Every structure is written in structure tokens, then in C-alpha cells.
Length: 380
Image (cartoon, rainbow, N blue to C red; front, top):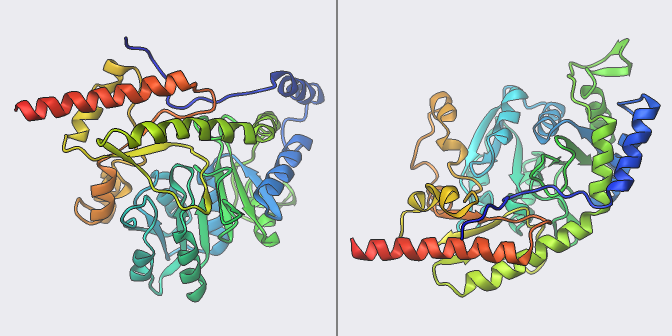
């Protein structure tokens, strides 16, 4: 029987605590630059084990600010093609040319060999993207390459709040980590983002740019900035989310463990192989379809038939987006690993409010559709 499932859903435990904070904000009349924003930043810095955290209105803004601080204008930024278009767009907004790169075979992560191949005198930064909430060991190799060439490494941690590798949290490998609090993410503020860093000058620069480039105040404009701050209402939401982070991660890992057992028994799909030293945050649960069926056909009308979206992270990739093909000459065939891998990847529903029964239904829907398509193929 068809039933609808949400592939992602925000959860707000202890709503009475959140409501009390919201009432406090409304009573104070101070809707920005208040105590809750400061508290959220301090707690997020502690959680990330970084000296500083600066809240902004989105992860895209966070990336743009960091890139502007580095000074990437008229240069190039190396970025994996396997990311949301916002990542390379941030480089464009900062005045740079995004240079897309392939992923490493067997992973969803930027290939260190590609970084070596693409580094040039114009390279101003490298961005790694922790897809689906996982930090693979390749991040250490890319970090070493960047250090050898004195090129800043930036982490796009939009998927990876709560993830770690060898005890280091997401955002602790590069000069800065940029996080997203979009409604689908592991924690949410509705919309919002965060920069974490140990660089005090970057902290000050980000604080300035998020409020129109203010220095000592709005009568002392020291930078070209924008209206990019996170307000007190959303900061209250962020505090509620951060205080429940370990519960969210526990629930996501429980659902992922169920999927692990079911996926491994099918022979029609494979899960991503994880490194023993990496702690997955499970923003998404991606699987590779291994049976020889048309994955595009699998996705078509899946929601109408089964009741949830069969998504991917990310297909089509950035280099296959029309605007990047038109403006930069990218085309099919340039990044064969990403194309071969991501065209056969789908993600199962995963969020902290999902039950085991929901997950089992989602998995059985996918399995049944795969089996039906296999049968149709064999009859053809």
C-alpha cells in the first residue's frame, strides 16, 4: 500500500525551551546581534573544537566570505563537480573562476590526484565537500597537498555537522569550515549558516561583512559587505537543535544501521564503504545501484508510485548543469568517475524523526521497484 514519506524533516525536541527563548526575544525587542546569537556561536565553536564561530544567513554566504577573505578574485578555486551548485557559485560571487574536478573512484569525494593535476599559478583555494555527512581519509592527503603549495583549504560542511575523522570534527581540517542550517540539514535554523575557524582575523572580517561591512558600527563602514546576519529568532532555533545534536546523530545512525543490513542482503545495490576512523553524521544514505537497469527510469514517477522522492547527491553534477556548460564549456565525458558513479546513485529517506517501520517501507519500495525493472529487462 502506497504511503507518503518525507525524505528529510526537521525535528524540534523540548519545544517548551525553544518557545521560552522565542518569547524572551519578542519581549526584548532585540531581533539581531543579541545574546542568543552570541550563545549559539560560542556553543557551535565548542562543538566544532574551533576557536571561533560566526553565524551568517547561509552556507553559500559562509563560503563567499571565506573566499573573499583569502582574496580569490581573478584566480581559480578547485571544487569537486559532485556538490550542489551553490559551492562553485560562491567562488563566482567572490570573483574567482570555479575549476571543477572529478571524484576518486569508490568515493563521492574530491580526488587528490585531480587536485595535483589542476593546481596552477592561478589557484587561490581548494574546497572539499563532505558529501552525505562523511569525511573520508582523502581529506588528509588533500590538506597535505594544499600545505605544500601554500594554498588554503576550505571545507564545505553543509552535510557534515557532527561528522569527524580521526577525532577531528568537520571544519577542523582547513582554514575554515562552512556549515548549512537549511531545513533539510542535520540541524536547522530555517535558513542559516556558520563559519568555524581558528583565524581571528577571518572572524573579524566575517562579522564585518555580514552587516554591510561595518567596523565599529554602521557609521564606520570598513569593508564592502551585505545583509547576511543570522537573527535572534533563528539563533534560538539553532540552540535548540545543537542541544539535541547527539540525539539526532544517534537516531540517524540507528536508521543507517538498519539500511546497512538490508542493502547488503540484496545483491542489487551496494552501500558506501566507510573508513574505520571516520564517524558518519548520515545526512543522507546513498546507495549504488549495481543491477543493470536504467536508473533514470527507476527515478521517474517513483514518488507517484511509492510516496517518496528518490534523490541523489548529486546528479546531474555541476558540470552537467546548463549554465556551467554554457558559460565554461563543460560537457558530458569530462569527469568519467563522477558520471559513472553518480548516475547510478540514489538516496534513501533519512532523518531523526524516521522510524524503523518507515525505513523498512522505504527500503522495500526501492527493492520492489528494482526487482520489477529487472524482470521487465529480462522479458524484453
